[in-house]
Length: 389
Image (cartoon, rainbow, N blue to C red; front, side, top):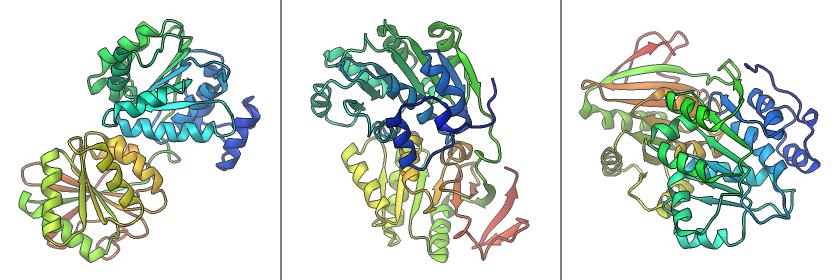
């Protein structure tokens, strides 16, 4: 079933506490994905939802989960699985906002990179909602620090990415342990073969919801391409940053080694830059992102694999529009970030088919370099071409 319009939240039969939380955030009208998913999930139906990232999927499954929680119980009642720790943290933050006026609801976020002892202490408080990455939740189950056999709702957020990252066996083991599960929600930007396999085995008569990208939820992005040799990339980036005087810049790289390399080269040129990737302790990564959010760091370079890491950060920067430079798969970033933080895309190609992608803001973009027509132009010794979105 394709959903094209939202509805007013006050027509969905939600509790006063949830309505109060929504009103505090200024939300009166739901997004299409929320309008399609909230009613069936409130009725304990299985749901398979396909929708672009940035359309409000967290509230689509978060609201029914919070409405279902029995605050008198100390059993885990809902499990939300996310492919990356950063997405898990983002979901937890949004769920806490939804539950802020419902006393007695306890949530915990479990992910790798954080001391497991701290998470065990949080689990001793008997949370009813667990948001976790599959690997870390599996670790806790082995340690018998958490039980999920009484969970009634399971949600796989960004299910396609999670399964594509190799978590399919972890996910199926976790779902097999939820013997009392009443419904399963699969939320994904695409419905891959692996997602269909999970749906076929673990769902029954699922409600299928589809939200197509349109002008309201599709990022308003133009794309440009810069042709460069490998050795020209960092020099061109430095020149662009200096000419345009960007205060904050994010750089994505396609390998951890490139992340370190780019950071050091920029530091050698006097640019205040720090990098984050999976080999750096989580605490240090969070400090780097916190510095960037506060405007104390000009450049944050990230390994591109965990895109949710920077999605969470950009969601907090909505309206501030930092410049973003990235290596592979620009379409992924376009879908991730939407039009809240980015307005344009520039691909910077290298002779060896490696490339960067430059996202720049509508208001603070490259005004001296690009005209309205977007026809081929020259920018700081680099050829610029307009390409179709």
